[in-house]
Length: 238
Image 1 (cartoon, rainbow, N blue to C red):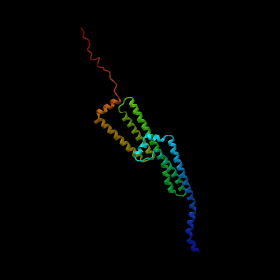
Image 2: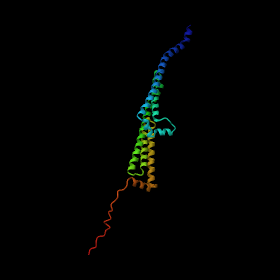
Image 3: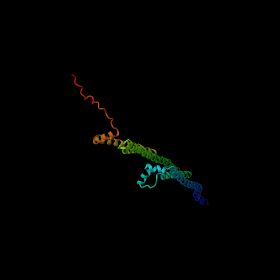
Image 4: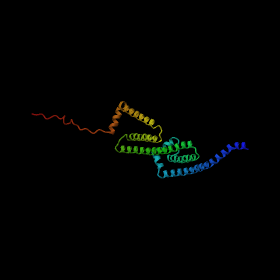
């Protein structure tokens, strides 16, 4: 009898642990179900909220949605933001559920992802607003250049737009902390290369073209003819 009791001791310990684990598993399942329902509700609220303030119109005018369509992504920026919020809620529910089960390592891993998702959302918002602002500056420069009859207004507007976009992309990448130092140095090297290329093109191969552009952009003031009176001979004396 004693040998049977010793043999059943591991089974008894397993049943005790199972009895302690099942209520935790039940609570974790309830947390996941509630988190899933809450995530769906919040995603729908974000979609309707962003569309109610015409955020989808802003992303379309900024060119973000068109860029996504060219890359084969039919989902718009508004849907992407709503999906990010949805997964943020789902991951938060998973983190709470695994924490209730006592799985500390899994909870730590998910918590890092949860902290990263808001940075991605902020980066998407920065890209959208920055792209819209760059388009606004480009149109403003083109309109102003057309009013003052500047022939290269479109080129100047496009250069200003690309410069603003490059700056905005750097800010967005810094938010998600994706190799910021390497990207910043690469951007500075690329910018220096472009400036050097333009300097060589204007200074060596396109001096006449550069002179024409400078004359159109900053025309010289007409100089007075100072030698007109100097060329007139004085009257002869008797």
